[in-house]
Amino acid sequence: MANHKSSEKRIRQTRVRRLRNRYYAKTARNAVKKLRSTTNKEEAIALYRSVSGLLDKLAKKNTIHKNKANNLKSKLAVYVNKLA
Image (cartoon, rainbow, N blue to C red; front, side, top):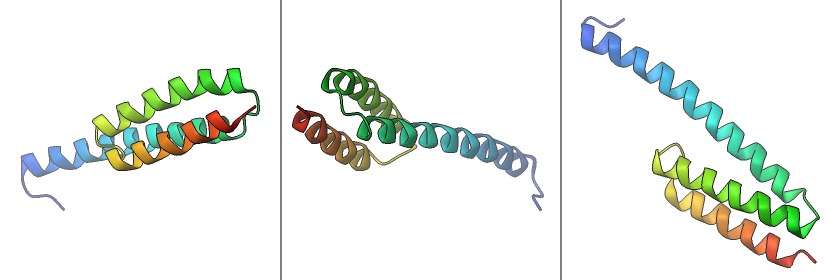
């Protein structure tokens, strides 16, 4: 158990951040799944814009790694462009 006030505060902050990161990471995964299941090109383009923004925001806050965000965006762009 923590013996210092600062370490107790750090534990509280870490718990809050972990829960927030888990929520946003799960939201991003669901958005990516929704985009991958879309077959309509216009709908996919609109979804791609919002998903790429979400991934950029998560990468900026270090919830996910920036390379992972870029890899996901690249693969999703290829998927969207292949739709007829």
